[in-house]
Image (cartoon, rainbow, N blue to C red; front, side, top):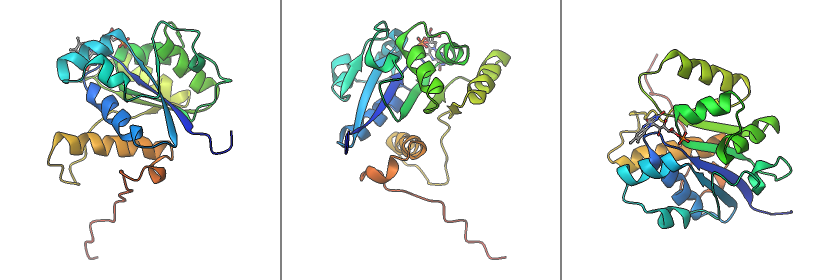
Length: 199
Ligand SMILES: Cc1cc2nc3c(=O)[nH]c(=O)nc-3n(C[C@H](O)[C@H](O)[C@H](O)COP(=O)(O)O)c2cc1C
Protein backbone atom coordinates (compact mmCIF):
# COMPACT_ATOMS: atom_id res chain seq x y z
CA UNK A 1 0.00 0.00 0.00
CA UNK A 2 3.09 2.22 -0.18
CA UNK A 3 2.20 5.39 -2.16
CA UNK A 4 -1.34 4.06 -2.63
CA UNK A 5 -3.87 6.83 -3.28
CA UNK A 6 -5.74 8.10 -0.26
CA UNK A 7 -9.38 7.07 -0.40
CA UNK A 8 -12.01 9.68 0.38
CA UNK A 9 -15.74 8.89 0.53
CA UNK A 10 -17.92 11.67 -0.88
CA UNK A 11 -21.68 11.56 -0.35
CA UNK A 12 -24.15 13.96 -1.94
CA UNK A 13 -27.55 14.06 -0.24
CA UNK A 14 -30.79 15.90 -0.94
CA UNK A 15 -30.04 19.27 0.64
CA UNK A 16 -29.69 22.37 -1.48
CA UNK A 17 -26.12 22.83 -2.73
CA UNK A 18 -25.41 19.72 -4.83
CA UNK A 19 -22.72 21.82 -6.52
CA UNK A 20 -20.60 21.66 -3.35
CA UNK A 21 -20.20 17.92 -3.88
CA UNK A 22 -19.62 18.33 -7.61
CA UNK A 23 -16.94 20.98 -7.09
CA UNK A 24 -15.14 18.72 -4.64
CA UNK A 25 -15.22 15.86 -7.14
CA UNK A 26 -14.02 18.15 -9.95
CA UNK A 27 -11.11 19.31 -7.83
CA UNK A 28 -10.08 15.84 -6.73
CA UNK A 29 -10.43 14.43 -10.26
CA UNK A 30 -7.20 16.27 -11.08
CA UNK A 31 -5.31 14.60 -8.24
CA UNK A 32 -4.13 11.05 -8.71
CA UNK A 33 -3.13 10.96 -5.04
CA UNK A 34 -6.78 10.80 -3.97
CA UNK A 35 -9.22 8.00 -4.85
CA UNK A 36 -12.82 9.22 -4.57
CA UNK A 37 -15.71 6.93 -3.63
CA UNK A 38 -19.03 8.57 -4.50
CA UNK A 39 -22.51 7.82 -3.14
CA UNK A 40 -25.47 10.00 -4.12
CA UNK A 41 -28.87 9.55 -2.47
CA UNK A 42 -32.04 9.55 -4.63
CA UNK A 43 -32.90 12.99 -3.24
CA UNK A 44 -29.35 14.07 -4.02
CA UNK A 45 -30.02 13.35 -7.71
CA UNK A 46 -33.24 15.34 -7.40
CA UNK A 47 -31.50 18.46 -6.12
CA UNK A 48 -28.67 17.86 -8.62
CA UNK A 49 -31.08 18.06 -11.55
CA UNK A 50 -33.02 21.01 -10.16
CA UNK A 51 -29.95 23.08 -9.25
CA UNK A 52 -27.26 22.16 -11.78
CA UNK A 53 -26.81 21.25 -15.43
CA UNK A 54 -24.93 18.08 -14.47
CA UNK A 55 -26.39 14.74 -15.50
CA UNK A 56 -25.91 11.51 -13.56
CA UNK A 57 -23.30 10.09 -15.96
CA UNK A 58 -21.31 13.32 -15.89
CA UNK A 59 -21.19 13.44 -12.10
CA UNK A 60 -20.36 9.75 -11.77
CA UNK A 61 -17.53 10.15 -14.30
CA UNK A 62 -15.85 12.56 -11.87
CA UNK A 63 -15.46 9.83 -9.25
CA UNK A 64 -13.01 6.94 -9.22
CA UNK A 65 -15.57 4.52 -7.75
CA UNK A 66 -19.35 4.91 -7.67
CA UNK A 67 -21.54 3.18 -5.07
CA UNK A 68 -25.33 2.89 -5.07
CA UNK A 69 -26.94 4.01 -1.80
CA UNK A 70 -28.75 0.65 -1.54
CA UNK A 71 -25.53 -1.37 -1.93
CA UNK A 72 -25.10 -1.86 1.77
CA UNK A 73 -22.47 -4.58 1.21
CA UNK A 74 -20.04 -2.40 -0.76
CA UNK A 75 -16.43 -1.85 0.30
CA UNK A 76 -17.05 1.44 2.11
CA UNK A 77 -19.54 -0.31 4.43
CA UNK A 78 -16.64 -1.99 6.20
CA UNK A 79 -14.05 -0.54 8.53
CA UNK A 80 -11.44 -2.91 7.09
CA UNK A 81 -11.58 -0.83 3.90
CA UNK A 82 -9.13 1.95 4.73
CA UNK A 83 -10.10 5.51 3.95
CA UNK A 84 -8.98 8.91 5.15
CA UNK A 85 -12.62 9.62 5.95
CA UNK A 86 -15.85 10.86 4.50
CA UNK A 87 -17.48 14.12 3.54
CA UNK A 88 -21.22 14.60 3.03
CA UNK A 89 -21.60 17.61 0.74
CA UNK A 90 -24.28 18.78 1.07
CA UNK A 91 -25.75 16.97 4.08
CA UNK A 92 -29.54 17.03 4.44
CA UNK A 93 -31.23 17.11 7.83
CA UNK A 94 -32.49 13.61 7.07
CA UNK A 95 -28.99 12.22 6.53
CA UNK A 96 -27.72 14.20 9.53
CA UNK A 97 -30.45 12.57 11.67
CA UNK A 98 -29.61 9.11 10.35
CA UNK A 99 -25.90 9.62 11.06
CA UNK A 100 -26.43 11.23 14.47
CA UNK A 101 -28.61 8.31 15.54
CA UNK A 102 -26.50 5.51 14.06
CA UNK A 103 -29.26 4.27 11.76
CA UNK A 104 -27.03 2.80 9.01
CA UNK A 105 -30.12 2.14 6.89
CA UNK A 106 -28.44 3.02 3.60
CA UNK A 107 -24.84 3.08 2.38
CA UNK A 108 -24.40 6.78 3.17
CA UNK A 109 -25.44 6.42 6.82
CA UNK A 110 -23.55 3.12 7.11
CA UNK A 111 -20.31 4.53 5.65
CA UNK A 112 -20.61 7.51 8.01
CA UNK A 113 -21.23 5.14 10.93
CA UNK A 114 -18.11 3.16 9.97
CA UNK A 115 -16.09 6.36 9.60
CA UNK A 116 -17.04 7.36 13.14
CA UNK A 117 -16.46 3.94 14.68
CA UNK A 118 -13.01 3.77 13.10
CA UNK A 119 -12.33 7.27 14.48
CA UNK A 120 -11.74 8.67 11.01
CA UNK A 121 -12.61 12.17 9.85
CA UNK A 122 -16.29 12.77 9.03
CA UNK A 123 -17.21 16.21 7.68
CA UNK A 124 -20.87 17.14 7.25
CA UNK A 125 -21.76 20.16 5.11
CA UNK A 126 -25.14 20.46 6.78
CA UNK A 127 -27.56 22.71 4.95
CA UNK A 128 -30.90 23.94 6.20
CA UNK A 129 -32.18 27.27 7.43
CA UNK A 130 -33.57 28.16 9.86
CA UNK A 131 -32.77 25.25 12.15
CA UNK A 132 -35.20 23.51 14.50
CA UNK A 133 -34.28 21.88 17.78
CA UNK A 134 -34.00 18.39 16.21
CA UNK A 135 -31.47 19.72 13.68
CA UNK A 136 -29.43 21.40 16.41
CA UNK A 137 -29.57 18.34 18.70
CA UNK A 138 -28.49 16.06 15.86
CA UNK A 139 -25.56 18.38 15.13
CA UNK A 140 -24.53 18.19 18.79
CA UNK A 141 -24.84 14.37 18.79
CA UNK A 142 -22.77 14.06 15.61
CA UNK A 143 -20.15 16.42 17.05
CA UNK A 144 -20.01 14.43 20.29
CA UNK A 145 -19.25 11.32 18.23
CA UNK A 146 -16.38 13.09 16.45
CA UNK A 147 -17.97 14.47 13.29
CA UNK A 148 -17.17 17.97 12.06
CA UNK A 149 -20.27 20.03 11.35
CA UNK A 150 -19.33 22.40 8.53
CA UNK A 151 -22.33 24.28 7.14
CA UNK A 152 -21.28 25.72 3.78
CA UNK A 153 -21.53 29.31 4.95
CA UNK A 154 -19.48 31.56 2.67
CA UNK A 155 -16.90 33.99 3.96
CA UNK A 156 -16.78 37.35 2.24
CA UNK A 157 -13.39 38.62 3.35
CA UNK A 158 -11.78 36.99 0.28
CA UNK A 159 -14.12 39.08 -1.88
CA UNK A 160 -15.69 36.27 -3.94
CA UNK A 161 -16.74 37.44 -7.40
CA UNK A 162 -18.38 34.32 -8.77
CA UNK A 163 -20.34 31.32 -7.53
CA UNK A 164 -17.30 29.24 -8.36
CA UNK A 165 -15.25 31.33 -5.90
CA UNK A 166 -17.71 30.34 -3.17
CA UNK A 167 -17.56 26.64 -4.04
CA UNK A 168 -13.77 26.75 -4.33
CA UNK A 169 -13.42 28.27 -0.87
CA UNK A 170 -15.62 25.56 0.59
CA UNK A 171 -13.66 22.84 -1.23
CA UNK A 172 -10.39 24.27 0.11
CA UNK A 173 -11.75 24.22 3.66
CA UNK A 174 -12.91 20.61 3.30
CA UNK A 175 -9.61 19.43 1.83
CA UNK A 176 -7.74 21.21 4.61
CA UNK A 177 -9.73 19.23 7.19
CA UNK A 178 -8.41 16.04 5.58
CA UNK A 179 -4.86 17.42 5.26
CA UNK A 180 -5.22 17.02 1.50
CA UNK A 181 -4.78 20.67 0.62
CA UNK A 182 -1.02 20.51 0.26
CA UNK A 183 -1.27 17.72 -2.31
CA UNK A 184 -3.80 19.52 -4.49
CA UNK A 185 -1.84 21.93 -6.61
CA UNK A 186 -4.93 23.70 -7.96
CA UNK A 187 -6.08 24.74 -4.54
CA UNK A 188 -3.06 26.48 -2.98
CA UNK A 189 -3.20 27.21 0.73
CA UNK A 190 -4.58 30.64 1.49
CA UNK A 191 -3.95 31.55 5.09
CA UNK A 192 -5.41 34.61 6.69
CA UNK A 193 -2.57 37.04 7.31
CA UNK A 194 -4.46 39.33 9.63
CA UNK A 195 -5.95 42.73 8.90
CA UNK A 196 -2.64 44.46 9.27
CA UNK A 197 -4.10 47.16 11.48
CA UNK A 198 -1.57 49.05 13.58
CA UNK A 199 -1.85 48.90 17.38
C1 LIG B 1 -35.32 20.89 -4.26
C2 LIG B 1 -35.16 20.36 -2.86
C3 LIG B 1 -34.39 21.05 -1.98
C4 LIG B 1 -34.21 20.56 -0.67
N1 LIG B 1 -33.39 21.24 0.18
C5 LIG B 1 -33.14 20.74 1.40
C6 LIG B 1 -32.20 21.39 2.25
O1 LIG B 1 -31.61 22.41 1.93
N2 LIG B 1 -31.94 20.81 3.45
C7 LIG B 1 -32.55 19.65 3.86
O2 LIG B 1 -32.26 19.18 4.95
N3 LIG B 1 -33.46 19.02 3.07
C8 LIG B 1 -33.77 19.53 1.86
N4 LIG B 1 -34.66 18.90 1.03
C9 LIG B 1 -35.38 17.73 1.54
C10 LIG B 1 -34.57 16.42 1.42
O3 LIG B 1 -34.23 16.18 0.09
C11 LIG B 1 -35.39 15.26 2.00
O4 LIG B 1 -35.54 15.41 3.40
C12 LIG B 1 -34.80 13.91 1.69
O5 LIG B 1 -35.56 12.91 2.36
C13 LIG B 1 -33.35 13.80 2.11
O6 LIG B 1 -32.93 12.47 1.86
P1 LIG B 1 -31.39 12.08 1.83
O7 LIG B 1 -30.79 12.57 3.10
O8 LIG B 1 -31.40 10.59 1.75
O9 LIG B 1 -30.80 12.70 0.62
C14 LIG B 1 -34.85 19.36 -0.27
C15 LIG B 1 -35.66 18.68 -1.18
C16 LIG B 1 -35.82 19.17 -2.47
C17 LIG B 1 -36.67 18.39 -3.43
